[in-house]
Amino acid sequence: MKRECSIVRDLLPLYFENMLSEDTAAFVKEHLENCSDCAAEFECFKSGKQIDKAETPQRRNDANVIRAVKKKIAKKIFKMVAAVCLVFIVLFSAIMFYTSISYSVTKDNISLSTKADGGYTYIILETEAGKSLSFDSKTEDILNEQNEVCGQRITLYNLQYHNNFSQNANSTSWGIPLSDKKQYMEMIVELGNDTLQITTAE
Image 1 (cartoon, rainbow, N blue to C red):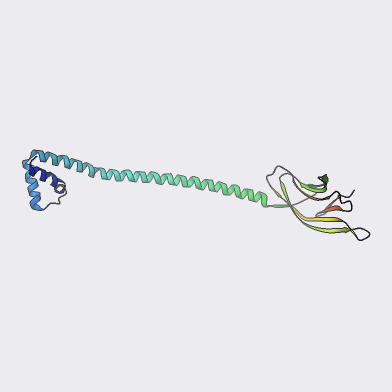
Image 2: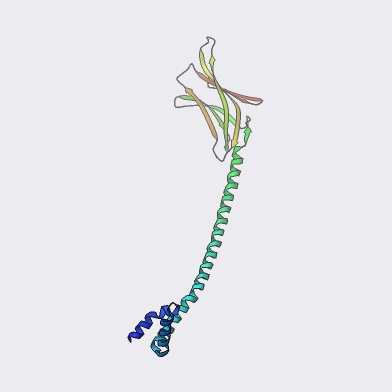
């Protein structure tokens, strides 16, 4: 390859971009008109650059398409998450509503019984399955004729129940040692117009 050809081929990128001075550009142009090898090289160079320039809008278009698809996917995901959250809120609200309402207890909702177990005797208050019980209570000593403490009286009042999802009966118990023959326990449950009473005394 001639030295002039080597110089011209180095200048081809600048010549293609019109970044040469007038004199240098005229020199390259004249060389290309007279050198078929360099002219062919320049045509190859121009073809490659034209392809690159043509690809740029295509790349931009592809990028826009990808962004649009991502945006659609993001919207779908957002809608799905919002739907799941809405269902969760509705279910949670329904559960809270179902379990937060309180109902007055009647004698049909509860039962009182006694049981001896493990050296203790117990009074057991039991409510139906699917209900949890709440109440206020007060405890006072029971005195005999000699003014001695012979037992305890436990009074339950303001009884309310709430619905729950348990399939087991809800029970609460109070106990005293069987060995203490002088002591007994009496339970009074006040239910509006009804009163239930039970004792551990024989």
